[in-house]
Image 1 (cartoon, rainbow over the protein chains, first blue to last red):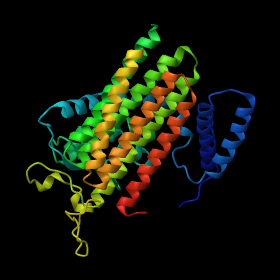
Image 2: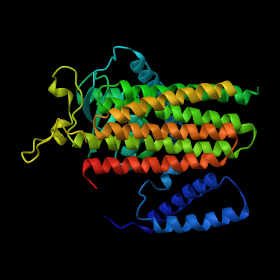
Image 3: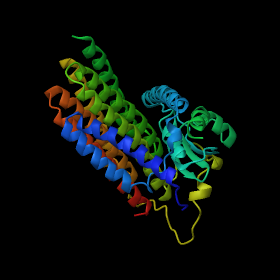
Image 4: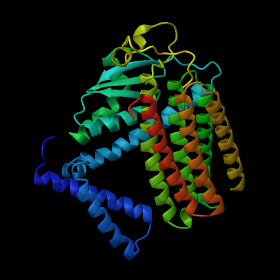
Length: 171
Length: 130
Length: 85
């Protein structure tokens, strides 16, 4: 594992601190003086010791353009989630169970592990697909209604909408 | 009835319907992967919608409810796909191959990676139920 | 509002009954773990609903911790079944 420069360490420390502080306030749900001071110290300690562990991102992630794309991604994701639930409801309630399951694979262009994790989780919650494994760049997807077994077409069908936005957020 | 109660009530009802469909889905589907599909998706949206509905109903009392509900919603949205993914991979590595209509070999692209025929391995055992 | 709570509780119980049937029938350990996972999610939703019915904020914390522990349990069982533990 390559050693981190001072700037990277600092970025990770502050991003972890900010995130943990938000989580702390949301958990305690109060702005009482004692709670906030205790939270500042506890989260500072945790984020100091977890610098080598969390490899999410640098300060680049807080740029306004990326935050805009995150909100856009969230809206697309909610739309797909509702669509997938109506799809599941239709399949479950039809007496003849209209399914044609199988496993397909496709290659993704995403660079980091973290972005692959986000894409795999999104795929699991979108219509008819369930991610089974990721080996290097290849995603293996269980598809409840297989339309094509060709990797390129499967990529267009399943992942393209998400990956275009994720590439803008994480690269 | 205030406007909060109407919106929250509708969200709660939608959530309850989807949670019920999730339970029905894992009862009706033919194999473990399809059950995971139905169970994960329907219960995720169902729980998120129901919890958001409760938060909206209680919003006129205090703001602490909706914040706590947001935490639970975010946690469910992250944890459910991860656990279903872990289960699916575990079941494939135990050689529970997915149900496929007909006998099309090319429908199972993962077999070439995970399902290599190991001579020392005698599974799948049909009688074994674990 | 009361009727909405009644309908919701009935639907949740029906979903829970289907999960329990799947939990008993199996046929593999994966199906049982999946049924357990579904029951955990149903139970979290039910606890949050009960906290609104009885107006007790502490039940929400109980639901959150229940969800976290159920998630960790499912992950541990899945890793064990895979043979990686």
